[in-house]
Length: 363
Image (cartoon, rainbow, N blue to C red; front, side, top):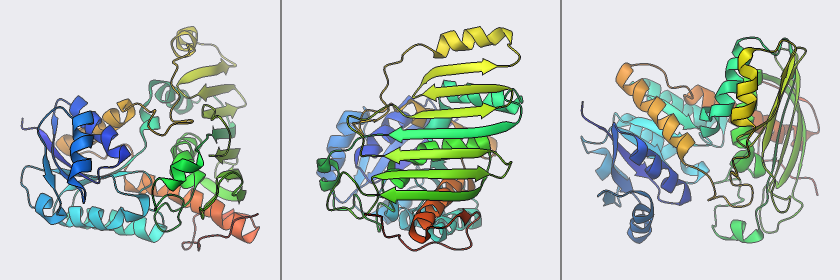
């Protein structure tokens, strides 16, 4: 069987993880990248991909290639729409780095373009593919928590001012689409709702407390009511020095589990099963992973590789990828509801009827 050919649009930091992930897949090959800066692309490829790759400065030129089947969008968040739609219209399957886009309208345009073209679409959320989170998902599916009562996640990270100053798009509504929530904590927003179910209501506060010269929040807290009646909370920051490991906790009237980064802190159920001791032993060890708590480059590409493997399987088997466009849209909607709650001072119901305007942040 011929290898699935990939092309990457954008050669910034996150493109390195896509390139490394593609290199891990036996049935895939990176064949082209698109960039406005060939020197930057060369440096990225030398660091991340050991095989020859063509460097293009024109997207249409790469889209015209018959040996490229999938386009990975690695541009700034608010610049995902145009290359994604172009790729779909060219008959290419589309992978979009999180977030899918920064407004629901723009998300829907990508989803509709892929649907109309008959190509597959996925949004990158690698946390879903970690071993411990998949074990957690299985326990939920088996009903081991009983009635879900509380879901919580914390992403208490640190980014120095130099992080925001390093790129003109960082910390802007137009291209970043938001701050600690939309850029960093969106992974755990996705993880929380995928475990607990869809969100019905949101109440929130956001603020800019530790940085200058940016438009977006660096600190946010939100309370949630899920459609199943359970309650939840999200804490998201880039303002907590030196940066702490992210957590997710799932609780019910028959069990509790808490994960810190890739380590299992709590795994307790009313009815103990034989595998529980093994699960605690396997995932209770300190992995040493920081997950980008203080350094955005300090993440593993393993989750990306597993998600791209799922996408290649969907292409070859004619199935739906685990995290398709509709799934990717949900995390954006929850975050936009949080921003709307901050802007209005009101509880916001989901689904949203329309995109909220970029909010004013509390001082």
